[in-house]
Length: 604
Image 1 (cartoon, rainbow, N blue to C red):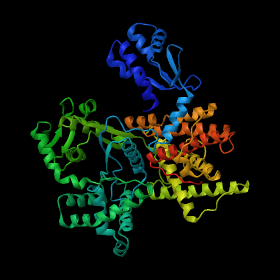
Image 2 (cartoon, one colour):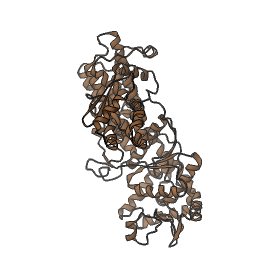
Image 3 (tube, rainbow, N blue to C red):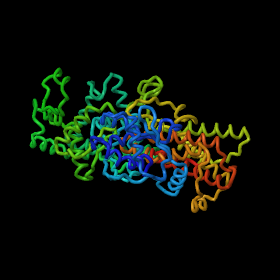
Image 4 (cartoon, one colour):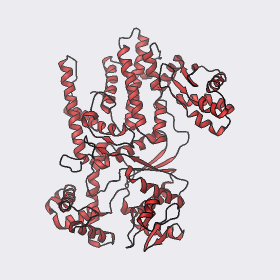
C-alpha cells in the first residue's frame, strides 16, 4: 500500500461520518497529496475547505474536528492545522525507516497490483509500411510502449496492436515505382533498400510538379489508379503487394529492435478489408447509418446529416463509411477494428495513441462505436503534440525533408559516444581511476545513452504538449534528462564496486535502516512515493508522472550524496543503512526507466 493510500484509509471513516453527502467522500480523499513544502510535513490534506463549505462551518474548525477523531496509530507523528484549513501530516522517522527496509526486500519495490485488474488494447505506432519509419512515428511508438509497460507492471492484461497502414495510396506509389522506375538488380540484392528508394523517388517526382497524395497531377493520378486496381483485386497488383509486404515489414524491424519495442500484434488495414462491407450492412440494418446522396453515413450525435458546408461548420460532422463510388473509409476500417478487438480480446478499454490532430476523428469514432453497441468499453484517444525543431516548426532535415528514425537514432548514438569519450577524458585528466572499456561496451553505452535521451525527452513533458527536439538538451548531464538519471544509477552502482560489497550476502541479510539526518529522511520519503507515481501514470495515462518522480528522486539523492558519507560513515551500522538507500535508489531508477522503455548501464 502506498503512503497516500494509507492516509486515505485512515481518514475515510472520519469523512464518511462527517460528510453531508457521502458520495463526495472519494473526492475529499483525492485531496490528500504530498506536501508542497517538506518543512510543513510529508503529506497535506486539503479537504477541510470543501467539507467546511458543504457543512456551513469554518474550515479551521472542521480540520480540528477531523484531527481530534484520528484513531491511535504507530506511524503518524503529527497532524496540524495551517492556513485556511490545511492539515499537515508528518510521519514518524522510525516508521519510515522500517517501511523503506520492507520495500528494499520486495522485488516490486512496494508496488502492489491494481485493486481492479482490467484488459487493455493499446493501438500505437501504426506506420505506413511502404516507407521507412520517420520522426512522425516516434511519439506514438514511444508513448504507446511506455503505457504498455506501465499498465502491465500494475497487473493489467495489455494487448499491444500495431495498426499498420498496408493497403492505401502508399502501395499504389510503390507499385507505380516498381513498374516504371525499378532497378531490378538492386531489388534482387536488397528489396528493402530498393523499395525505400522507389517510394522516395516517386514522391520526389510528384513534388517536382507540386503534387501531393490527395492532389492532381499525372504521377499521383497514376499511383491512385494502381491503388484502385489493388483494391479491386487485380491479379498483378495483388501479386506485387504480396511480394512487397515481407520487405516492407522488414524495414520496420531494425528500428523497433533499436528502440526495444515489441508489439504483440501487427494487423494492418488489409486484414480488416474483407470485413468492411459487413460493417456497413450491419449499421444500415440497425438504423444507425443512412444513405445520403449515394453514400452511406452515420449521422452525428444529434441525428443530423449536414446538407451544406455552412451547416457542417456548426454541427459535428457525420461519419462517412461508404463513398458514392463504393469505396470504404478509415472510419469503416476503424469500426471493423473495434469489432474485431472486442470479439477477440474482450477488452475493458481501448487506447489509441495518435496525434492530437486526429481528435475529431476519434471523438466521432468512439461515439459511433458506442451507438453500435460498444457502450461498456472505455475508449480513450491518447493524444500527443508535435515534435518541433529549434525554430519551433515541425522537425525536419536541413533541406526540409522528413527525418528518418534510423538517421535520428544514428545521430543520438554518435552523440552518446562523444559524451562518454569527453567524460572519460575529463576524469582521467583529473586523476580519477576510470576503467578502460572495450569498443563493444562503449557502443552499448553510446546506444543506451543516445536512445534513452530521445525517449526520455519525449516522455518527460505532458504528452499533450509539443516539444522541441534538441540533442544538446536531451544528452545533458544536468537537469531532468535520461542521461542524468542513467548517471545517477551508475554512480550508485560504483559505490558498491568501490566498497567491494558482496551484494549477494548484502541482500540475503539486509541491514536495518536508521534515519539520522534530514537528507536521509527526505530521500526515504521520496523512495516511498514510487507506488503513487506509478498509479498516477497508469490511471491518467501520463508517463511524465514517472519522469517527474525520477527528477525529484534524483535531486533528493544528490542532496543526500553531498551531505552523507556512505562508505566512510561514522559507524558500520550507519554505513550499512546508507548502502541500503543507495542500492534502493539504483533499483528504483532502473525500474522506472525500464517502465519508460529506457535501459541503464553499470558505468558511464
